[in-house]
Structure formats: C-alpha cells, structure tokens
Image 1: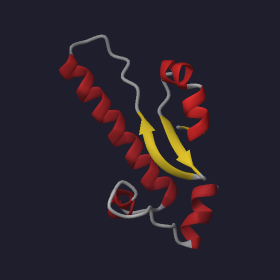
Image 2 (image 1 turned 135 degrees about the horizontal axis):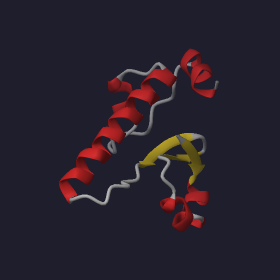
Image 3 (image 1 turned 180 degrees about the vertical axis):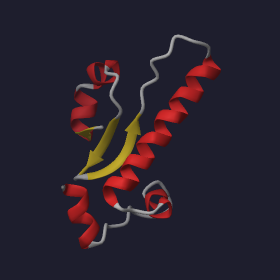
Image 4 (image 1 turned 30 degrees about the horizontal axis):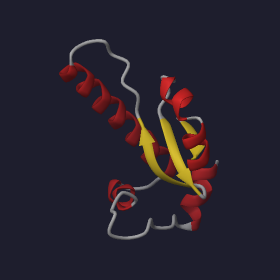
Length: 96
C-alpha cells in the first residue's frame, strides 16, 4: 500500500486516482484516510463487492503490520475524538 501526505494527495489527486494501488493518506505521519480503487468494468454490485474485499484485505494487512486490534484501528476513524497514539512498542513495529 502506498502512503502519501495530504498535500501530495491534493496536488497529485488526478494522477493518484488513476493508479490501481490502494493509498493511505497521512497527516503528520498518521493515517487519516484510504483510497481503495475499483478497477472492475462489471456492474455496480460487483464493483462494490470487489472494493469491500480489497478494503478487508487492506485492513487485515494494517492490523498485521502494526499489531493493532480492530478496536484500536476503529478509534482512528471515530470523528468524536482525536486519533490515538500508538504505544511505543507498536510505533516501532509500524515504522519498520
């Protein structure tokens, strides 16, 4: 999965959206959103199923790479509170 900053995503949106690779959009090194492209030329239902399967695979990969739980990842998408910090041991895992 490719990671880009918010400015890059804004400045290069047209080109990035043509790519087939999923993109994680980050602000100050923290993921704030994802772009999961749909490549199918089939009907809308098939495109939706394909997009959801790719999203599921991406979420599983993020959980494996970071060691986060599903609930911890979900906290990043809760608009009622700021994104949580990763614990130091998981922060090291996430950066490689």
